[in-house]
Image 1: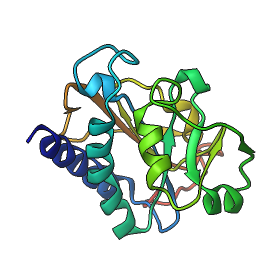
Image 2: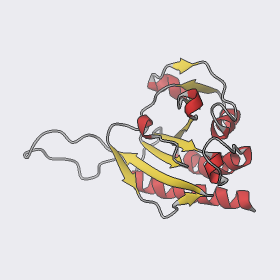
Image 3: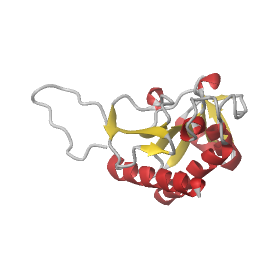
Length: 184
């Protein structure tokens, strides 16, 4: 029952985020996820593959339906590297690095994504169009330059804090500049 609730919370949060973010097919969503925090323990101290699986089961079907790509952030023991599909890394020109995430060096979230992706690889940096930070994992470094907080009604997943963001193009120019009204 607990896993079903975590899955529903993750599904609700990502659905609401995607509605606000107005992403396009092929855009990238970075998700940092502390399964320890979801379970109510300190980040890195209670890794749970079951919690990570429940988040995956909630998020991925929504992303697939909308054609959004997933980047799974590893923990700080792997310098917050990311797990993505090889085709995403190649299409975006990301440098592939050599590491295999483990529950206590990368985290259960990265391990779960690695196991489910078709052709997973690790990369060090990305520039995602939107993101979900489950459990204070600090995803900001992996978002495009102008990040905008997105307030979703789901404030936690399990016992972990949830913060979401979208990005938009930088505004340039001065008082005479005109900007598109449907920024993304």
